[in-house]
Image (tube, rainbow, N blue to C red; front, side):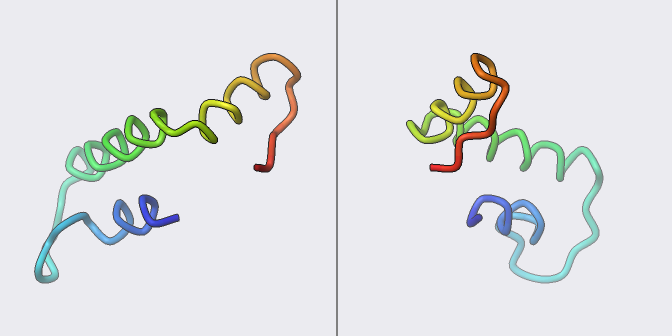
Length: 57
């Protein structure tokens, strides 16, 4: 949830600033890649791919 809040708030911006869609997509990509290194995320992905069910760990 912290990574989602980081993306939605525009990252490390210190003051309100208009940002492009590409900027937000970059933040989203960074957050996704970071989450993919966590054990729980990998377990959730594996559960969906092997059983088609969402693992809530």
